[in-house]
Image (cartoon, rainbow, N blue to C red; front, side, top):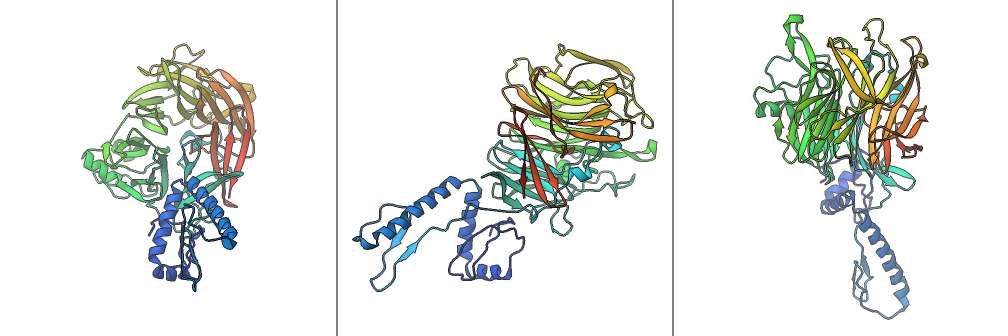
Length: 569
């Protein structure tokens, strides 16, 4: 029997005939169970066909349907004609004695008109209701835990979404979404999966396998004495690999696995704290990075500091291969990117170091020095993404972020905003990870008490008098060294009151030259603070949810900055 849910057999009351359809039902009915008992073999055959077509063999299904139509038409026309041998069609006609009716044996087929509604499996996170933090909001200083994570192959995509329906038995659902006539639809929904409290990351490989991370929410349990030192606990974080049909290939209990790899590995404590989490796959390697609490510091009454924690695993076996990577203390936001040779980390650091950090080959490189005292928490900087440069022999990466254009430091208590927050990029050397010194702009700041000069290119030019700020920056490479930049524009008039003015987009090249000027895309929907935008087709996309009337919104932006929203219900 198939282990996954939401692909439930629907058996007709006449159990001599078995048909299979996809219904958004999580529990089999008594009628289904009765028929299953009588028709176990037939059900397994139907289940194998379901997996076969879930794996993407819709072309063959269509061919079978066409051939079946031709065959049935030929049978009708042949009723008045002399008998003849079958014409080689892929169906079997069994000739019965003259006194018995003919029996036609057709293969069991599944209708491609699969419909799984969002409301039947998910009440999604609603950024329009639950994530309204602007430039003066204190929570915006930190990354946000993921909510609706998308992993795309450019045509179809998988979604790991936190479920906020208190009546469902699951905490998250894994969806596969594919193009359909007029839009997109859910073709697979998995709910009966190993899942802890929170979704942490999702990635796919070229074979269509899905990898996801899930973690416990223990923020209310953490204290100076809990968890005790040197206790590697079960079910704090798990990393699971699924095949395209939803079968579990491995399920790694990460904290004990890290200890087995290295008995002195850091414990996983409060995963995602004051930060976010990301998972990436490439080169037969899995990377997971997230915020983490440290052991208690008894010099400050047992307070636990925050830092980033990285783990690498073998993508075939799920075995831990590395229990640490670059050191970033007070890592308030993180990103990952597989560049074809390895997985790169990108951090927003508040202390040790105070700045944006590139982690490559497990060494760290500064990308941007943040103004202000060490470990102040107020960074006035937002992490974007890293994208690859394809055709430059020297520079291999673009890094996007937002920060204030003034060098005036802020204060936690009375001056959180000290200048307009604008978008910027830096370019990273593909050989030695140095920065392009020919970027046209500079910003000299005092960072952790040391004067530093940043070389960068400002992409937006909000002035101090405009009271405008860029938030939630996102960067998506669309090929040919062209990139769509997305961000939110906010108005702040009195350092406390933030007004959302819309999602904007622009198109740039690998030097940051503007190919398409900043354009308002939508003022009705937000960019998700905790989830990344992604490549779909030849453009960029992001996904949001509606909790009141459960549905998903797919937001599409092409290279001409034409915006479209597709509703998935």
